[in-house]
Length: 206
Image (tube, rainbow, N blue to C red; front, side, top):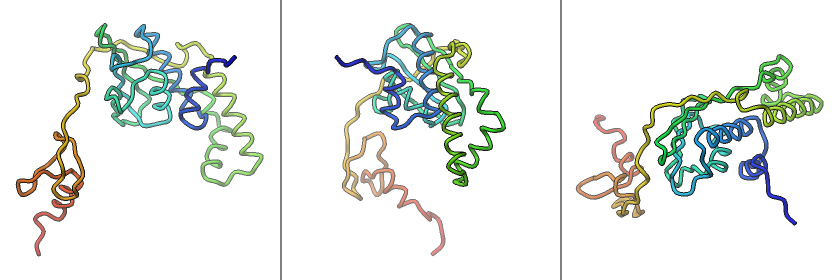
């Protein structure tokens, strides 16, 4: 009999490895579903607006069902641990900020982190860094949500559901392009990369 995977295991499987950022995303997703009283998204019932492009976003995609492909995960990369989730049916929205574990700010952890990412760490230092990181993640994943996430209700304002548009053929490269993303050159449709190539150096003297 196969045991169902935990949310953490599902997130790690999708992301490819375990890390603190992924753990933060798991807790944010948990807080979002609890705050909105929602299940995993199926057809854009939930909209997520994320304010970074970190590892946390992968956990949010897996656990909330909000994805870039469905059009209900919007990335606004402000470099902040802020995440807004809205439930269309209830017209309710919450903004969640994830708290960094205090242990990440300790001198030993920061010193080891600089050495590991700077590729100057010894084998012993790498092992110690892995040990500390693992301990922090374990603690973070089981702490009460109120200790790791700040949840605030915000005004409900979300974009309409994603639309499917017809495609046109770029007159320059011959590839298909979504009609609203096409540009025109000499009266013919072109894709954005081809239009950019055309515009490069515009107005420069010969």
